[in-house]
Image: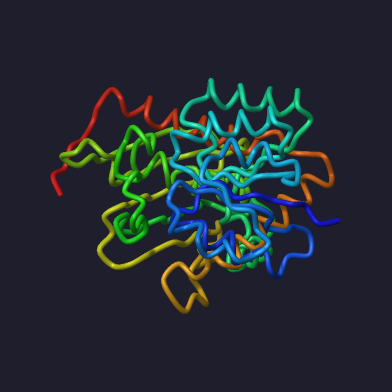
Length: 310
């Protein structure tokens, strides 16, 4: 059975979603929505319905599920409306900007009996899947390090809201943190934050952070986030084993162009979303866990803020 999906928001990440549908055996692109007609025009001569207002898309009875690809501060309201309209929801990370909203969405998902899924695309990265299969028992691991470094202006393109803390929810911790933390949770299990060191620029945007986390068995993982990285991208996970070996998974391995790894990751996001719907599971658990970790980072850092002019 093909799940009929509408995409709300055609910003910088939308092309990875859109490219996933033609090859999918479980999901069909049924509708798109964006305020800017130049983004929806390419669909006007296809069988994909086109909307400029998201509520109109939510009222489309032919749409069973939606992908919400909007600025972070809009996630809560649109996710909630979609669930209340009886749509399954795949939301770009972060699910929400705070725990109160995340809990409301989880409860709404339960009451509506609809899937609430967060698009943590790095779970589907092939080099990381290969790395996870090579590591063996976590009892043999001494330390895990995750590097998530990029220049945000290169990533954001015309989506300037990334650099507006009120819309983004912060900076690198709010936006890249959820992907990094979820990746680590997928690799080594549930996490808690033990230390957070955050550097902000003269706009008060957190552009760099070092976050230490720990899983239930006491294994330490350190996340390095950088939004002003001058050398393109550096996105990898390094396991240091107790016997001294290091095992590395480079998320960009095999990527022939900037961010091309996202194509295979989002293809798997769409198919896994469809599986969650078909199996009647997923009520925002992973999204909520990442929101909690991000919020904890900012709470820890409130006592002492480091400023760096860049």
